[in-house]
Image (cartoon, rainbow, N blue to C red; front, side, top):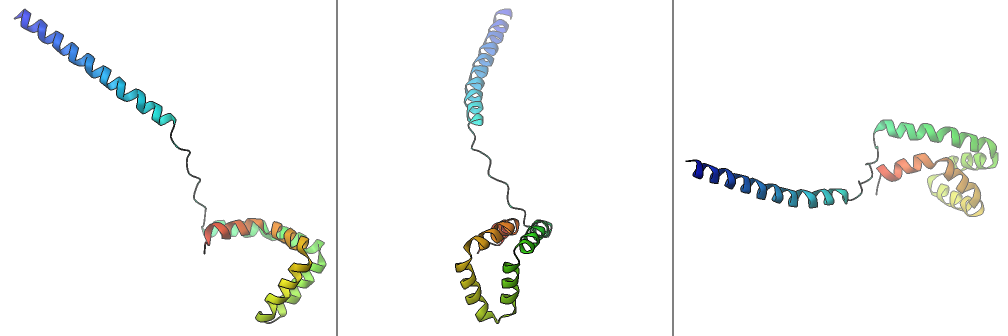
Length: 123
């Protein structure tokens, strides 16, 4: 019995050794693949009402200070707001054509709200 018992122990050890080698052959490439995983995707935009209000809260003081420093732009916006809808577009287009830097500065002040709308209100 000792001879058959020792053979079975040797056979078990051989099978276990082959199993460990096979496991190592699978584990090493898997670890290498885990290291080369693609970069994580960027987080989804926050489109909650809280994010909208936060964007508006960031934008309001910047726009207010810009308009306080540029009364000509503030008066033009007030004038355009009183016009009928058809005239508003034409008047605002004329103003934008003649005051490109002021329009860029106003857009920069509204940047946070623009980013929110771009991320959450895709057309």
